[in-house]
Length: 100
Image (cartoon, rainbow, N blue to C red; front, top):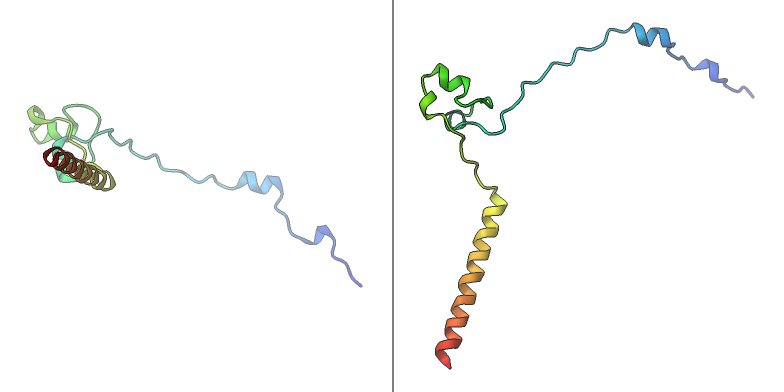
């Protein structure tokens, strides 16, 4: 019966690993915390300075201001449910007060 030894598997020596060219990882552009209203409307990248560079370039510097964020869909649904519950509770309380 023939047994395989550990030396039959090819291994990469450390010198070969170190001689491989390192892959260049591109730097990502830093995103703004909040886009201005003009960049937000145009779906374009904004920077953190106010007025932003895009608004300065397009002569909109006087109206460059932080845009409003939309509320998440699941939070909007939760608000509607709370409003419905409040309306029902108010109606029940009013009904109980008028019936006594």
